[in-house]
Length: 375
Image (cartoon, rainbow, N blue to C red):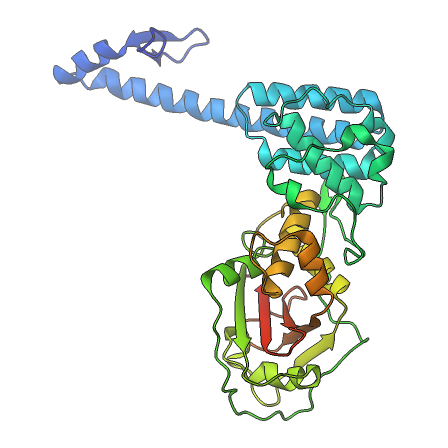
């Protein structure tokens, strides 16, 4: 133990005094508790003051980082990177901060200014490499041509984001991003059903239960809920396998009868809304859930939100974790997709909760994701 760690600060003046831990031990062994009482009181006061100061300094640094990130220009970006480097050197947590900085930079800085920032010398495990990876996908989703800015293109490697396509795919339509300013952020997942493609079954609906049973595996469940897990309040997944093909026309009436928590208390006349939607709309909903988060979480932002949306899409299509993006896209285009909401206890009426159903091309597999932004 070093000499500094072997001493305890005492005294309440601007110039603190110190006693050794051995001296404190001797007081305790002698039953002389009074000095320890004063020592404890002083230490607790100083600890509280230091914690308050740390929070204030942290808030000030956070404001300064956002100010620099939202101020266009290469000089602002360069200074921001220096501050992030200082934070990393001081042992601060960087992971979510880098994802946030990437999405703010992508919103407020030109790709040309970001491209001229030096990333090339950063090793794969350096925080600059993580920032570059996040920036690449943030800009890609915003329509930036990656070939025009080669300095921003990350290497392949084994990083989780390296799984993602290096081009924006056709199904990645209309990604909705959190909006950031120097004073904060605003977002909202648009989970309401469109009028287009509505297939609401007539009421009263039959109250009989479907003979189909949930057969989701642990791996399937975990993959399907990826976009919502830890980003929203709660999510569940179900997979039903049929002996005879289910037709898309049967799905709207079938869903309320399935043994799922999200419709378990749904009465024959309770609201059940459903719409057929293209896969691009489903991807956008999953992306918004993962990237924006909800009431309890700020989400994963653009790059990691993109990865989680693809993972959930893969799970809904019945593909394993190691499937490629090409495989996911190819099969997702063949599935029939539905978006539904209902007046059940699972679906709270705050405008954010939703259900997704995915019917396989052969009609023998029906997967469901239900997500609520409450717990």
